[in-house]
Amino acid sequence: MKKIITITLALSLATALMAEANIPIDKKAMKAQMTEMAGETSKFNPREHFPKEYFLIPRNIPYALGLVLHHPRSSELELTKEQLEKLINLKKETKPTILKSAKEVKLLELSLLKMLETNKGKISKVSKEMNELVDKIASKKAEITKTHLQCVINVQNILTKEQRQRVGTYAGLKHKAQKKSEYKVAELVPLPHLKRLLASNQETLKLKKEQNEKIKTQIFKTLRTQIHGKIKIAEQLEIKITDAVLKEQKTKEDLKADIESLIEIKKEITNGHIDALNILAKILTKEQYTQLLPLIEKNKKKGHGDKH
Image 1 (cartoon, rainbow, N blue to C red):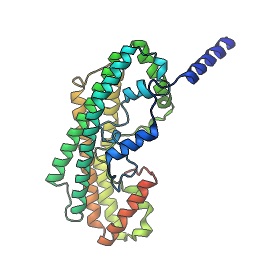
Image 2: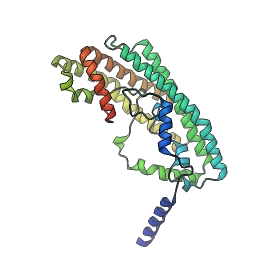
Image 3: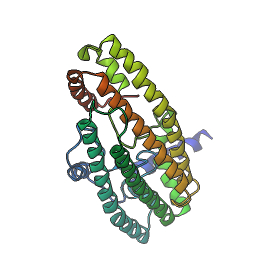
Image 4: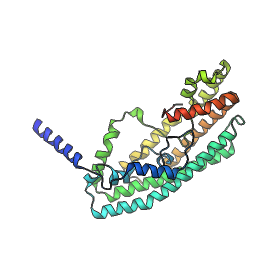
């Protein structure tokens, strides 16, 4: 029995070592191309991942074409010439649409950021214009994710059942190793997070006791009531949608209600975040707020994932 297990493991390892990408890509060149296409990054998001982060669900639905064409083990699928042609054509049809839409979303997000900075200290709630812009961003992101879902479904239909299982095997290795706590929900608009940032920069900002009290009762209360619970709901919806596509092969029409619910939840999270930032701008002095901006930028460059 031991010998059989050892031989099986050895054969599996040998197969994995011999495997290669169906279509190898130069990752460095690809990254440079995406960076050029994305254009200038926001000072709050220097580690931008274009176009992925402009999807409604950027992390928890697989990038199926990449897995079957460019993954280092994708040759294990033994695609036929006809399958390969269909997949390449699908990529040619889908990628330009997604890139164009992602750039549009990015420009809308930057417009929202500009609106937020222009009105700092002047408003205490999300304005009508901000609300309309968030709705537009949500709608665009939903369009991208629906295109993404359709792409995954198209790839599933091109592959055989056996090939789909093989993709699941090599794509799922990293996923299975992740802890549940590492599951992430991307916000509709990645605005700067506040709690840890304020806590770690008390000395620099020289916050007064009265300001700290207002931050605690007004800002952190806003974050707790408007964001934390909703992030959990968004997480559950993302898992539900992902499982429905991968395990049940549901279509975007089947998932319309869940996608719309996810959009609404993420809009509420973004609005709560904007409210918190506007309240902070009123609590801080002009000098403190000016000091805070480079601290946010520095924190982002270090790659710290601040939590609310």
